[in-house]
Image (cartoon, rainbow, N blue to C red):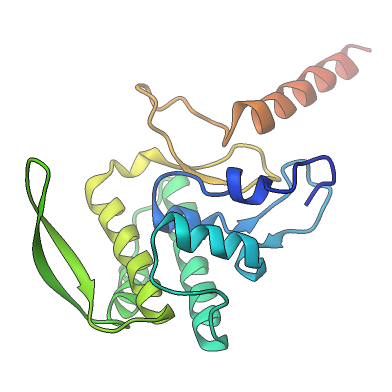
Amino acid sequence: MPSHLPPDFAITHFLSEGNLGLDLINSEHFDYRGRRLPQDMLEDHAWLTAWTQHWQLPVTPPPDTLSLATLHALRALLRCMVVDLAAQQPISETHLEILNTFLALAPVHQQVKLVSGGVRLVSLPLQAGWMSVVTQVAVSWADLLSRTALERLKVCANPACHWVFLDQSHNLSRRWCRQWACGNLMKVRQFRARRANRE
């Protein structure tokens, strides 16, 4: 983590886009300036604790070895899917088959609950533990794919960043994960490149 960032930056800025699946993808954190190696937030106890608390996941970090490996495999699949979507490639049947294997790891049952203003259908895992978290992430991702225009799923246009986000702008014009980070950085670099070309 860059030294000029506050100690809680991982917690306050890397819990991201309002979707459990997007948070998992972005748990592989790349230095947007391209100066440092990627950081695996799944190996960071503070981030994992914040993530499980943020999403009210009924587990205590750290995950066991098998669950951690499964989270890594699911993250790799989701990133592969979103990179294909960002490149305007259709979702492949193979990726959906693999996603279905993650969905089947922890069976769930459906239950109707009263909420303010009506009822809500919820899926409850039949078993607790980190494998049920893996399935919850897969369910969250599948739900996002089913109810979102797929062109809204994007990868930051900064080639060093790799941050995945949901573009909720009216005209699908968002290019950067965050304007104050990658947006400003890339504008400065483009300005310097234009000036160097004129000299």
